Length: 443
Image 1: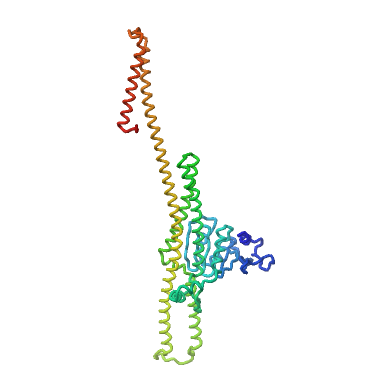
Image 2: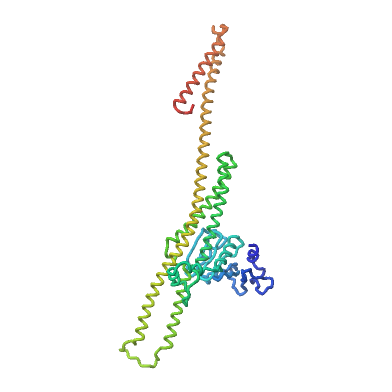
């Protein structure tokens, strides 16, 4: 990975890495991982050049520097689609199917997928590097034909008849086209990244929540608040990826639009047939000087050629419709697999959020219980204060400067004190019985 980062560093000169330099060594597989491209001839149109990683269908990768308008013409994309890949802007996860390309913006993976190549924004992020390495590994993996032979003759017959075949009719060694492989690696990278973040959040969250239930403090509450903010942000990102995959699965037109190899094969086939028809017409055409009767019927050969053309067009239309349905089914199965993965990640986050909500409810119940105990204690304290105030009233009454016979009695003070205490205790017990009767406190 460190060597890959060094190869992805921007070049010192305006041109790309010099392939003739003796210090530039190929990778262990014998293929040069990131071959430089001379960009001296590229025009700067005020937007500046941007570094891209290009991976072709054979697994070869190189760094190119292309400006915005050149990329728009190369991939036939509008400016707003390229704006989705701009790292200076923050856009939600998006997968767009266009005429000649698929625009993918999934977390760190921002790339343009065509029928022949993947153009990825050059970045030193580990997930981007892992995406490039994994895509190269899958494109160069051998032994796919052995898996094909073990799947049965019927499935091989169906797959060999699809439009994955090239112009000459040789079947492709892999039933998934190049753009689906690149899209699969991007979906896998995004789902893996989000799932790893969800796992890290779970590892951090559960001990913290258990500690909060045992000890409610300001520090623990602040840590849980930050944890919940991260959880909400991550849930929003996972939900967006899930909704994007679900939206693609619900729209057959968008899935058919993403099948770039089929559209390219159709275009090449139409060009090949037009060239063949033009060659036949020039080779076996009638001379312009030859007399033609306006009332004569068309020749039998021309009539037969017209019938064969109509039958061939109908057969190709039926075959194209069948292949389109099968390709949509394969893409739908691919999306369903990663929909299950991202839905599982979303379920983890939902369970974690429910656990946080349950913890908050438990804490609120504990706080309410403490608050109720404080209220009960305050009620008893208020009642006791009222009883003690009775002694002050009695002292105030007897403290007046009025001569009464009771002052001459030697045991008067003792009797006044005892009677006041008995009255206070009686009043206090009456209040307590009233509180218990009204269920204001569990005594």
